[in-house]
Amino acid sequence: MTDRAANDTLRPASGAGRPGAVADQLFPAEPGVRAIARELYGHAKDLPLISPHGHVDPAILAEDLPFPDPARLIVVPDHYITRMLASQGVPPADLGVPSLDGTPVESDGRVIWRRLAEHWYLFRGTPSRLWTERVFREVFGVETPFGPATADLVYDAIAARLQEPEFRPRALFGRFNLEVLATTEGPLSDLSPHAKLAADGWGGPGGRVITTFRPDDLVDVEWPGWADRVRQLGSLTGRDVSSYAGFLDALRVRREAFLAAGATCSDHGHPTAHTGWVSDVDALYRAALGGSTERAEEFRGHMLMEFARMSTEDGLVMQLHPGADRNHNKALFARHGRDVGGDIPTATDYVRGLRPLLDEFGTDPRFRIVLYTLDETTFTRELAPLAGGYPAVFLGAPWWFLDSPEGLRRFRETVTETAGFYNTSGFVDDTRAFCSIPVRHDVARRIDAGFLARLVAEGRLPLDEAAETIADLAYHLPRKVFRLEKNS
Image 1 (tube, helix red, strand yellow):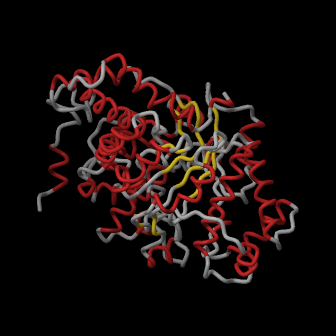
Image 2: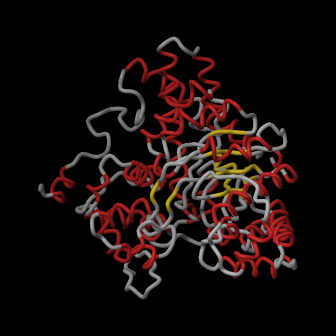
Image 3: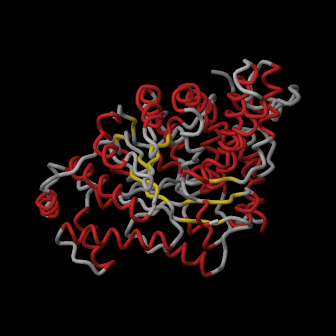
């Protein structure tokens, strides 16, 4: 193996010796098509950012405190990074990831940062490297190539910036040109950060922060502690949740609270896309309160039907994120809990699974559902035809394992011929990493510019229509699909 520290020291700065390499990053290699992509990108690059689905903690903006050290900002919360390192034998605890079982956790940010630098070669060719290096360069202005020999230089440069007022969360919100940032909370959340933002009269320069209703932990009876959370729901809403009717009433009360906090969407992260009414749901619900999980899939499918019906009443756009085998790495889950990178994609059947829901609501003008997948085989076979066949259905952007440059390209290539551009919903960053939001959106805009440029070069789309399309994909479509215009 080569001496990586020496190589990193000798490596030229990003783009050195290749004029325009960074400016033209991700554009097609063929010069003529690249020139068209560059022109099309110009129509989208400065448009405001719409972030209609993500997991940024709203307390970050409500409190507006300086970010912690670079490691706790960039490494610790990013399961893309910690997952890769865990696959190579670096325990998440050594990267500062909190433990549930008393495992000692590294607390020195500089030590964590050096561990990332030591293993930076693992990220060659990955979107994590692309995003992180662009965050260094474009958010913090750090051009120094990252690696073992330069880890402290980069750390110190970012740490210094984090002490400046211009790098506080609210200031960055404005600099990122964020128009809408949607966070994600469960029904038991008191939504206090959103209340504080409202009390402060703050929504960012020209932008706003809204919440999203995510009820998974109250409809998945297999999730440990479900019955206790149901009782908490009853206490929070003042409803008798010993009956199924009371449970539904309590959920409606919480949806009203979320609507008051600006929500335009609900989000549902179910294991599958199964939907369908359950005739004896009252008995199923009572059995679940008693500890039975035998019919968990039936109950989840029934609740998707209920939430679709609620959406026709209150207007929340449904988002469905199926297909993740959660907490597959049991050792990782036992030590660190949920959402630390132990989930694995699974095959998903949308055509049969969604038929009951679409039979009842798929042509209802009040209803809208955005479908995501971790199973790329479904884009052409199932999702694009469904979006092309039901006015209520829109295709969500490639998500999680697929929100990479190649995944974004494949998405456009596989769905456009059947669903077109206007049955898709625009890019979602789906991130907890606040500082990566502008970078991820810019990557998506560059990929769309390249795809549209090829259509123009091949004589399949006039340049003026391609320019209009990229602006729609980047900005106008997500505002429309996620019903963000109503609160503008």
